[in-house]
Image 1 (cartoon, rainbow, N blue to C red):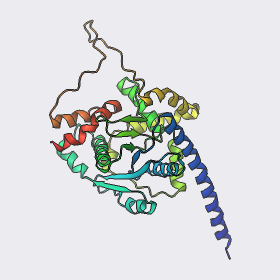
Image 2 (cartoon, one colour):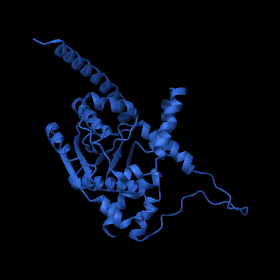
Image 3 (tube, rainbow, N blue to C red):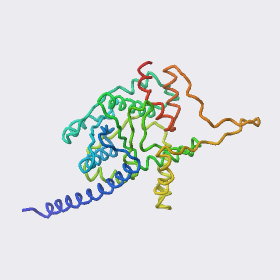
Image 4 (tube, one colour):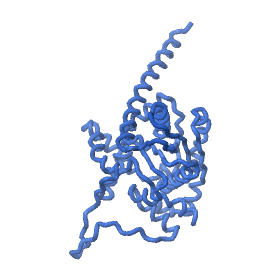
Length: 319
């Protein structure tokens, strides 16, 4: 016979499951809209999901698996995790989790931090930025090697809005991450199915579903500039005053997310009455070592980074 505690636990589990289904439904609807709006998933696609072990990528995997189960088209799903061999970050528990879910899984282990120490100037270059781009290059290589034509990344609406604001504030241009585009080589298509989903929903679902979230406690991340965190706080404070701010930002960003519009800085005076051209100069032909440093200096310029990083891994291998 169940005591009072047992009855309470059972009722709590029912309430949790009910809330989980409701939150999953909300996320699934927004993901479905994004997939339709940006034509993300097509018949016969082989999708490699980049799974870091965070709440966003693990939730995205759950949603895409559910979409595949109900979809009128056929597509394959696999997952890939990049282990940078940092002692503070161990994603290896995901191996058992993926086995239980029956998802084809690729675990790529590369000593990124050691590579960074050999290549970067610690006083000037960002290890965090370097690690992010290295991981992307490794994901591209895994997709090519295993025959996957689509790479799904877990950036959500909050991420896109923060990038949009940072680009306007610091680069003088209107840009954000694209929702569906091809890499520079044209052999891997990158999609962001969570583009319409708010971060708080992903956090709630991960808690309710008891996802095996892997904490990433890399010291390099804590030492990195906190500009994104400052923008996040600014947007949160504005949302209290203007509750629809993210809906408005999404409408503003949609042409940028489609890659149909790119608003550049106007020509500026060089101080002697002449105006500099606003057209982008051709990419310089640089030695491999300079290439890597040049990519790091692109900062938050996602459009340039995306065009270049298809060759990043090859550049690193030639150093």
